[in-house]
Length: 186
Image 1 (tube, helix red, strand yellow):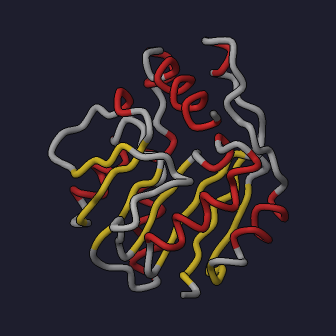
Image 2 (cartoon, one colour):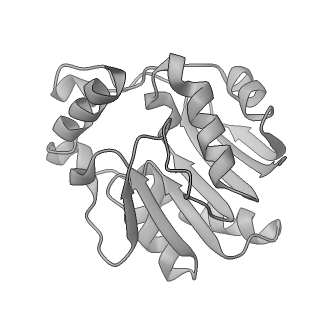
């Protein structure tokens, strides 16, 4: 089963100190917060694929009511923030927030589950959604003999898929990552 295979892979990855060392989401919280403020985001936020939770902690410090979601509970380092252990393509129906944040996660989703994952994220958020998506192969998977970036699409492929669920407010790329902010089109 895809879910168990992927969960087991990430439980192994989060046991690797080298993998825990870098939190891409943590490094773009300031950018995300500025964009959210520019477009009037307030209230609650879900950190989809929260990993260590360091980005979630920074959002909490900025005043957001944060819920963390990840399917490998051994990833989480922070305390005092609601955490839901769940697969992103099978989120609980009660999970709801005004805004969402998903940094360096979508490229890890098996290609056949990308559409379902985006549908679940879209259903759980009512206003703004910020994605940072890697466009290049990973280098950390070699620590456990696995490939981590399973969906390597171009910027235009990702934007096309995202634009079916969100109205694009901002997108940019540096060739390695796509940064995309969209407003839900519920």
